[in-house]
Length: 564
Image (tube, rainbow, N blue to C red; front, side, top):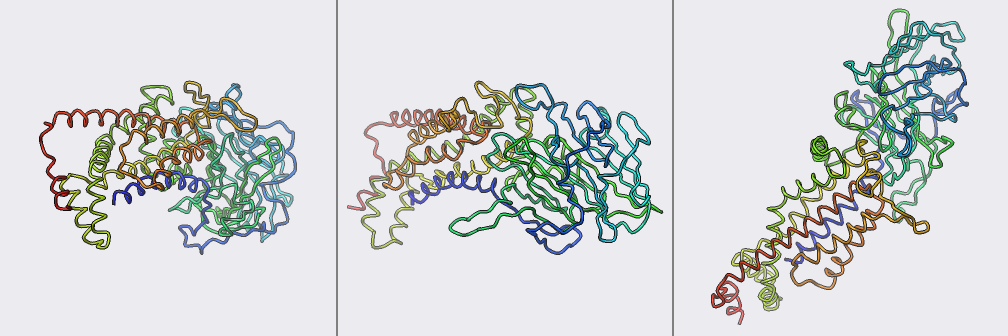
């Protein structure tokens, strides 16, 4: 029985690492939205249309942009087409060694974000060539007016919240108004995002929310795959289309997201990989189709367009389920709880690395009683191995009697086999929660700690040819090995000994390119575990030494006498 629980405990840790990779790699198929739209069909071929989708197109116009700005973002709007040429994140640097801001959608090879096409009598009428002029303009408000080729007037109004206003400074509100009827819907581009450096979990994704669940389509969904021995085999595709109701749609990478939330649910969407020129990994773009609302002699559509960091508190304040773009996974509640705890610690200790260390210490203190029970149970289990083997040998042809005597032996010696693996199992959701939190927390971007230059990516200090040298995963593997060596274990089979020896190597390999913040957590918790086990074992040795030498150990003596 002890072997069963030992195997269960070790397998649980291994399973946590495997599931974590699976969580990062999963490709979720969309489902119907709140308007009871039939189940989604993913089409591998793009929808036929006379004009190209807003994801692609000619190089951008060179006319001077129109500007909207607050203390957080600077928005450049093109007079030709009225789309967004770029959005500069004034609070976020483009890289560690530059003070220049990170810029969204600043690629000449794709069309502007929010480039629009009207769906009129099943024909697409692009707005990309419409010349808009400024009808109204302030620092935070812009009204553009232009004419379609048939003479109809079209207006695009932009509203940006002031830095100290009631709205979120990253949320841009817009209305598009067209004079005339017969306009069924409008298709809007979401813009494009690149993958971030060190993105091993495929955080570049298209996201849609149907009012109940968020659904994620990762970048790798477009590439072909042979599957696992043919299971899950798929062909490569150029784009993926949906016909369903969506409360909002978004594209996201490791740190930023562009979320379009219409006043009426969108009815269709498309996403596809994009060649953005300067980045070899490419990018991801998308578009959504929204029905227009009749307003007198006009057809209008209202929507908000959030382009900003993946900050849970900010996104939760926006409402509409937009915080779900952060993808906390199956242990979302725990991930959010750990995020709030980390933010609270960072408010006191303004260094993200030390905040993670202190959060790890707090988690280990909460688990201290359980780990203590685990170590004591392991010690007791090791002390009854001889009579346990005697029972197994004596009753090897009578499994029921063997189980009864084994349980009796456990009761007489105060052994709880489940206590040995329970702390290991409890650490799985904690590890998952922390992983999901660190995976999308933009706060860790470029955060330094000791030699680590960026806690959001692997702590590469050098390269040995093509192989990066990441120190924290090596320290994690060493501390895991030391912790297993210091943990008292019952007599093990050769297979169990091999598994215990291989676990540090397997986990080191699995986590070698994980974000340094996550590996830091695991390394610190291993180190604390070593100290804890050492203290507990020393205390138990002192207690054993205090027992008089001539005092019999009754339970074991009774068992041995009975077996004779």
